[in-house]
Length: 273
Image 1 (cartoon, rainbow, N blue to C red):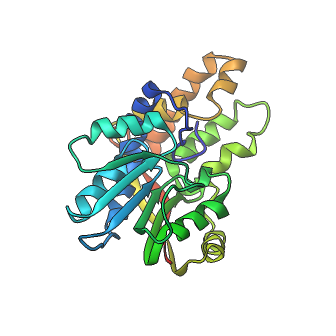
Image 2: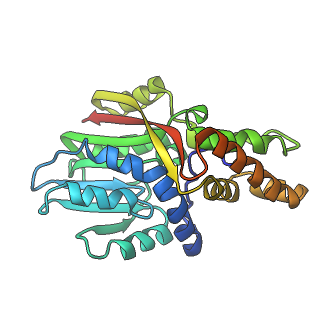
């Protein structure tokens, strides 16, 4: 039912929901791009790396394993509950965990060698300010590496689910339901980066695959976590099971019943100060 490859938790995301979020969306959507993103990391032994919106630590683990053991990694998130889960999962790794708002980074100017953020800037209210903050804390020549989701129709399982869910709505979804796929335009991203003071900008759309053990599991997760779930439930709770059955059937027909393997697409942006 979701119109996005994923939803992003708020600062007060419940602990139990954070666990469920990680168990479903982690392997389905975030793990493929975590592996892809860290391929672009190359830093010196004395580097300081900042991850913004670390969430449940899905990307954090790959960053820590990629960078030199002597490099410092600061993993941050606005959600204390998400951060607590990540810290528990990765307690064996050398990571400095901090509760931080991307729009107000508590670091000195020119103090970071690299800033990484996966699938969060779509939800940041003041994007120019957030990008300017990254530019401020990066050292000259430092790398800013981040991902955002491509258009909904290029993320097949979510698009399939959204199309079915819309048939059960009395009114169109609010614009806020499109936030997760709101930063797919390369020209818009380029402009934001240039205005913030970045140079050597490189933006690419990278297609991968989301894999679920079964189409049924994918359908259940997408429907339960969809932004219109509660609205449809208010109309008629019986619709929810009906939607799950329809989504499972269509996912199985298009992308396989077990496993379900559907194409996904994201935008990977890089820029230097």
